[in-house]
Image (spheres, one colour):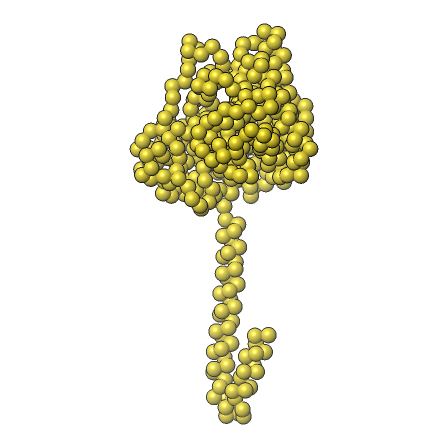
Length: 394
């Protein structure tokens, strides 16, 4: 079409042989310029396509957000200039009760997900997708054993899964259910309920001592003693983490239940109500959102609940149904590194849990590698803070 227009233009400009001979160089020049322009357009489109396919294979450090703010971590490179407020763990002589962590883990052995092209290298290790998920689970345990070495870890999983994981103070507990990707969040609540039922039975039969439970995603790093939640706030049955998000104010990646018989009963009843709401109202929601929407619905359905409390960065206690629920700010107990551009005010000094959700999971492995070589949690947090704005394709 372009060449046809060039030809017509040449005919109008050049009438007769003399004019044609005079205009021939101009016609050739116009044709050449259009061809070059078309080539560059195709090349640029190819470059854009390549950029979309590009994956980051290493950390890229940027400026640390929150500079100059007194209650935020300050960094110079990956060196912390002010230390975060880590608290010394309570030892057995100071605390009668134990704290255990519980997570649900499903292993998927889809051959299509383990192609050589999907390999990702972190440090001196290369992982396919199954190996990456297992590596993240191991790092989850590593952080707990550093910051809360007296805590047990329970991994709830499909009985058909054979997890290659043998660690001290780690128990793999099979629970029957449907662990498919689309039903995993629903199954997670069911597994939590089944787990609490078994613990309540053992507790009432005096087969074990009181143990408080913290149910979490496996992509979190515990960087401070969370056992103090149960001593600092002695009157709650269930603890949730909240954020100033109108649609999803509660994050289901952190749920604590007091380990007394009454606390377990009320925690189990609370989760059963969440499960019923999920099953009846939010089955069509995204596979990663249904439980959070159900949690918010159960909390907001209380006529006396004040949703404005979600806009403040302060813990508060409220009665939801028959349970006393403690609401803890995500900024301290479920802090997530930012992803991509946007307004961000840095890392609070009192952060206790870092949640590497979504594409941040590679950063979790990078962070553990850094901590293993430096043994300084505050410096490791600077690494997270300075690289957290980069979106990783993991």
